[in-house]
Length: 208
Image 1 (tube, rainbow, N blue to C red):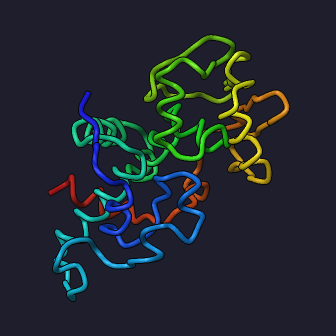
Image 2: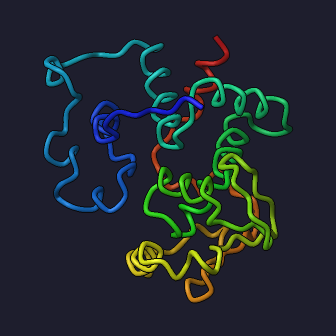
Image 3: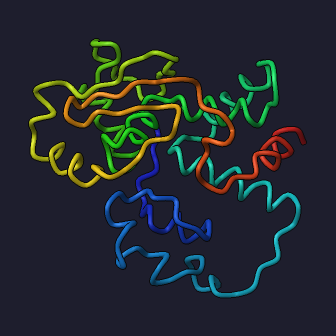
């Protein structure tokens, strides 16, 4: 599967805001966007006024990069959201939030979505007691997400649990770090999205 291999800090600078793609580094003064809060490249500090299409594209790219999804799969999520009842933009964000790698990150079992994706792929994560190694797996209400017993004892997971011990997951999730276990209490609502997003721009982009 194709995957972005470049500098993730460069992505945050391009989008003009922290996307928290680097884990612990994003919370320190080493964060690239804190040190250089302008787009990369020799013309990065120039003043560029975006067109309507440019605004739509940038919003689409920002959300795609937050969740670490390639364009083809991102478009599939949007088409699926269109077929659901309700508001397309909100349906779209819900499908992205329900990804297993995102839920692992939201629970505090990883410091970034990229790290969460690796944990899922390598078989460290269980859903209802069974190993699931598909990052795009859609969790459902009532699902129990846990770290495999042999994995939770590793140095890395102990570091992550300590780092995230004070983190409160969104209201649609609950977590118990002592058991390395979380539960999906309900499906996410629009107000559970805790980053700046204008989903109507993405709807407009794909509706052109």
